[in-house]
Image (tube, rainbow, N blue to C red; front, side, top):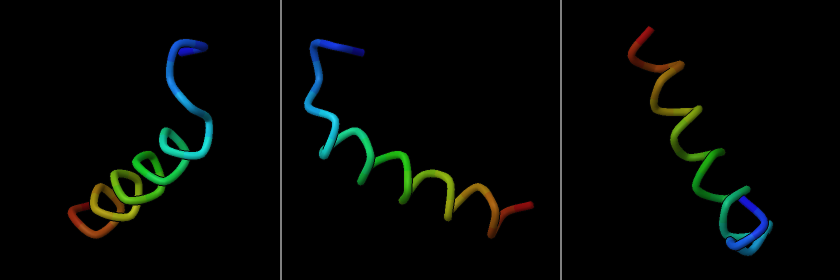
Length: 24
């Protein structure tokens, strides 16, 4: 994941994790 910018990846992961937690 070093090719991606940490900030953008962090933001995307936060959104994805939040959505997954809502589904579960």
